[in-house]
Image (tube, rainbow, N blue to C red; front, top):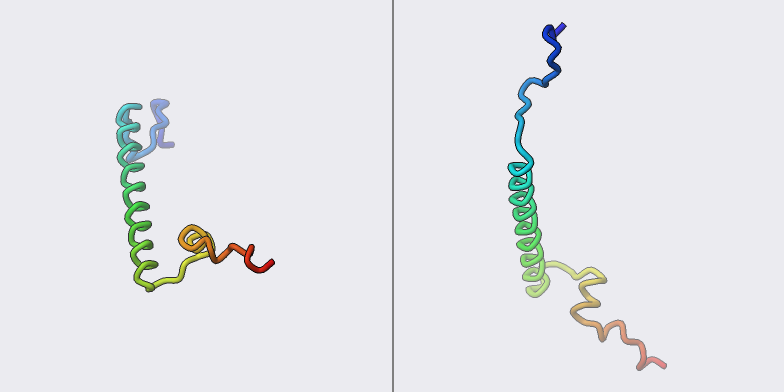
Length: 73
């Protein structure tokens, strides 16, 4: 019904080149990395100030002596 002349294009579909897509993808990846870095920085500040508890991995990285049981033997 909708394609009388044989065209099968979607409405609101925009055609972009590979270079345009790659530029968009690089920008999105950079934005994502910036958000992750900001979240990690904020988490470090929150841990340092005592606002949030460390998870096990963070505790191991910041205070590895907690996991050293050589003095118990």
